[in-house]
Amino acid sequence: QVQLVQSGGGLVQAGGSLRLSCTASGSIISINGMAWYRQAPGKQRELVAAITSGGSTNYADSVKGRFTISRDNAKNTVYLQMNSLKPEDTAVYYCNADVNSPYLGRYWGQGTQVTVSS
Image 1 (tube, rainbow, N blue to C red):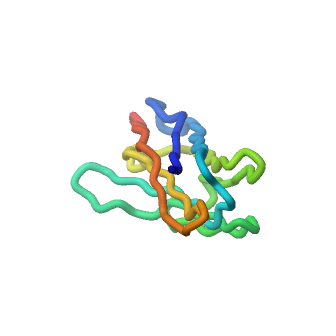
Image 2: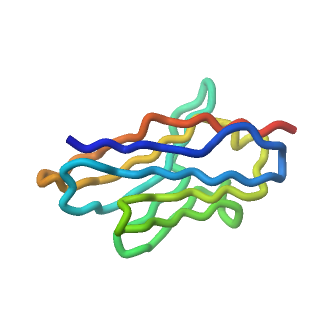
């Protein structure tokens, strides 16, 4: 069984920074892509940022230049550094990972609240 456990998040003023972490554990052979999604109240879940096993990244237009996704393959961990936060970034953030264990499956973290006050 594979689990993704998130940490970080919380309440921050506009313009501030937060860092989210997400660590995968269990019977893991390898991890392909990892990503962060978010869901604001009354809205659909949306992709925020993604990173391949080789380190290639892509970002939603709304966070480009402010958020940075990175990963530590040795620790099976993905990070999301969020700078210059805006009230519209307020949402529950979820990580996911495509894990070979040995069968390929997509797993999700438990979600963490990020609230940006104006």
